[in-house]
Amino acid sequence: MSQMLLEIRNATKVYTQRGLGGRQREVIALQNFTLNIPNSPASIITIAGESGSGKTTLAQVVLGFVRLSSGQIIFNGQDMATADAKQLKDYRRDVQAVFQDPFGVFNPFYRVEHVFHAVINNFRLTPNKRENRAMIEDSLNVVGLRGEDVLRKYPHQLSGGQRQRIMMARALLIKPKLIVADEPVSMVDASLRASILDVMIRLKEEMGISFLYITHDLSTAYQIGDQIFILYQGAVAEKGSTISVIDRPHHPYVQLLVDSVPVPNPDVKWEGEIILPPEEEMRSSVHSGCRFYPRCIHRMDRCLEAQPPLYKIDDIDHQAACYLYSDKEVAAPVETHQAATR
Image (tube, rainbow, N blue to C red; front, side, top):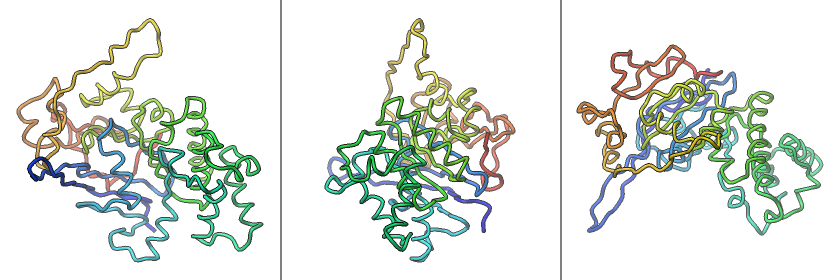
């Protein structure tokens, strides 16, 4: 078995848009994205960035909802582009998802228990109803719920936090190796957010389940993430240990992103309004220069020549894609080392 659980190699996704007059243009949703998640130890890898940065495209690619334009998704040594039917089914069992909207994923005509029975029947997890109920109860208990409180209810009778924890329990039911969590706490309040994040940490530490955590919220990324990739218009701006990247951002975009987080001090005025120039022209070709050029105060002529490579900032895998650090060593391909963990 491969020492890597998941390998994403040079993943690129290009969409074609039709504009006025039937004119077509390409939009680069994801460009040359590379990531490794080791089999052990389990880790929480955060993919962060603003809306339109490519986060959800990456999640959909990993889950198999979207085909790559180029690149590879390799799981336990198997290239998923060449996987047979059995390998694909095993992959869908080992890689589960928790989505942003804790209501939209439920069928409102079925009781909550249907969510679990559908999974059990599809993967033939248990031979009888008694074992079914025991397995469901075990999963619910891990996320702080009880079957008698939720299983016979309809989705609209539950809070957003309960629905999201049920989705976590459903994913846990089949003991996956990786959970893709796409903005799982963005639609719940602060108190429930903390409980869901705590569940993710416990699943990682106690059950060895890794997470690909998609978020725009740097504060939650800082709380639970081992490693972080910050995307800007489909390309990696900065990556490394979550603490290192957020405490010491180097890419101008990441510095702006971190500075935009309000300080929890009523005496410090937050000047959060930023006027942005048009940007989309920079993501219409894989051969264009730095995506951040229109907004960057440090922009140089060479920034328009090519997308900057990732330069090594330190020896603990902190890297930034900016020509300001061109005097530093270009980072080695990610295949040569494992994901950093705290």
